Amino acid sequence: MPQTKARVLMVDDDPNLLESLRRQFSATYDVVVAQGGEKAMELMASSEPFAVLVSDLKMPGMDGIEFLSKAAALYPDTVRILLTGFADLKNAMDAVNQGFIFRFLNKPCPPETLGQALADALRQRSLVEAQRENYSLKRFKHLLEGIVQGFSALVEARDPYLAGHQTRVTALTLAIARELGLGADDLDILRIAALLHDIGKVYVPADFLNRPGILREEEFSVIKMHPEVGYGILKNLGEDWPVATIIRQHHERMDGSGYPQGLVGSEIVQGARIIAVADVVDAMCSHRPYRPSLGIEAALRELEMGSGVSYDEPCVQICLRLFRVGGFVFPTAPGAL
Ligand SMILES: [Fe+2]
Ligand SMILES: [Fe+2]
Image (cartoon, rainbow, N blue to C red; front, side, top):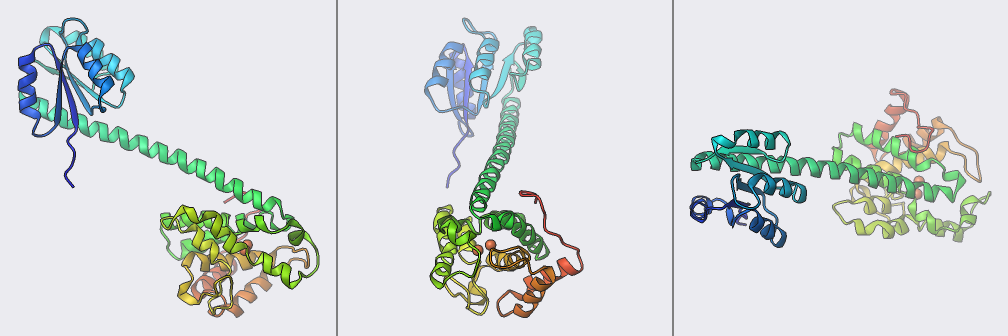
C-alpha cells in the first residue's frame, strides 16, 4: 500500500517563495501553501489536519508569531517551525521559550536545512503521538480492569459461597500460567477470563446457588449451563480476545467427561485447562452449602488422582509444586491479585 505523504502547510506573504517551496518539497510531502496568517487559519479550519506548519515571521496583518501561537492553541498536535531573519532573533527565541515553536530557522533557508527540520518535526510528532497512545492505552486498561472487577463482584454478590472465588482462582491461574512461560498478552486474557469464569451463574436462580443440601438433577443441569451462558455474554469480544472460549471450556475435562461440549485433550484451549485446575482446588478448599471445606491437602490429592485424566498434567504438576514447594497461598482480600 503506498504511504500517504505527511501534510505540510507553508505560510509566507511572498507568493514566489511559496511556489518555490512547493516545488522543492512536493515530492516528499503533501505541500499546501497559504499567503499570510489569516489565510492559513482559514485553510486549517476547513481542511484535514496538517503534520507540520512552516511560517515566515514578518508578514503584514497576522505575523508568524501570532499565527503560530493561535495554531498551537487550536491544533496542538501540529509541529510548528518559524522562519526568521537575524534581526528578529529575540522574537524567535521568545517564541521557542514560550513553547509553541519546535524550531526556528534563519532566512534565507537552504532547502537541505529546511528538509532536515521537516524530518525532525515529523519524528517529534510521531513521538508525541506514541506517548499519547501509550497514555490512552493505560487509561483504557485501567477502565477495563474496573469493569471486569465490577462484573466479577456482581456475580459473586448473588452467591455468598462464591465470594472471592474468582479472585482466588485468578491468582492461582496466573501463578500456573507464569510457570508455564505464558507471555504478557496471554496473561492479560487469562486474567480477565479467570476473573469472569463463572459470570454465566447470573442466569442461575439464586435459590439453587444458596440452598443447602444436594442439588436435584434438573437443578444441577441448570447450573451446568453457566459456561455456555458465560460464552454467550462475552462472545462479542471476538477471537483476538478468546476470553469467551476459555470461559466456555472451563468445566471440560481431558478425558471428555466434562461439559458443555465434552471436548478431549488438546481440543480444550490451554487457558481453560489452567483455570480448570485452579477452579477445582479453590472449590474443594471452600465451604459449600452442602459441605464444609475439604482442605488443601484433599484438593491436591484429587488433582493428583485426576492428573492426565481429568486435568492437564503439566498444569497439575506446577500447581502441586506451587503449594507444596513454593508455599502458595490464596489471597484473602477481594481484588488482591
Ligand atoms: Fe464454573
Ligand atoms: Fe468457578
